[in-house]
Image 1 (cartoon, one colour):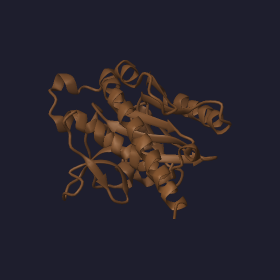
Image 2 (tube, rainbow, N blue to C red):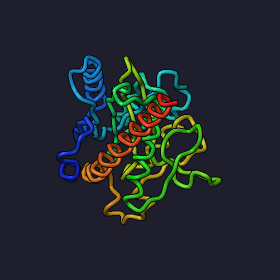
Image 3 (cartoon, rainbow, N blue to C red):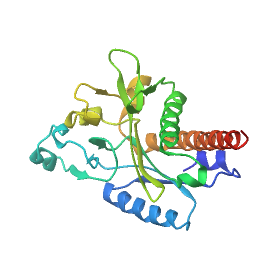
Image 4 (cartoon, rainbow, N blue to C red):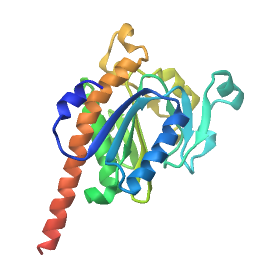
Length: 250
């Protein structure tokens, strides 16, 4: 990547960011497993993988497959694989024009639990959308990033689903940048049949020529997300350290 490397040069924090471009889902899934194993034995620092995928549907470990609207034959005709994985959450679509972020974080080293990590990821998505002029927020008990979250018709801009093994997180977030929103008709996003998916391009009113799904648009958003997530992760760690110090001083 370009911008985030310059912006974060010389900074501490023990977070290594990798931009992988467009990667088949199974290839990135295997890479996550390898990095989690390495992080558990302290062979590498914390990682943030940023990438996009070819079209694929993934089901969380306890997800209800009935939320996949397309038949197996329809998915096969479109070359879209359906994969059940270890993360939490329901069915999710990944595809071109969508920023995917996989944080490989050893939580104890940062003195944080899973919930602060979820909040840091949500806020980094919110910060990234805001950098493009798109206001968004979170919804209670519905992890992710939402436009008009408190309205009668909230729109889902980003999804979130994590797994922690041996104290190390993986899987992560998916933020729609120039994603083809028609592909969300294949599923009930995150198991919610009445939810409308949206994208940064749509919410910001980008012209058609700039709204086509592209790796370049994802790379641009990845620059911003990398900087935002580092800041929010360090903020979560600092808050946890301050709380621990205050508790110890009582």
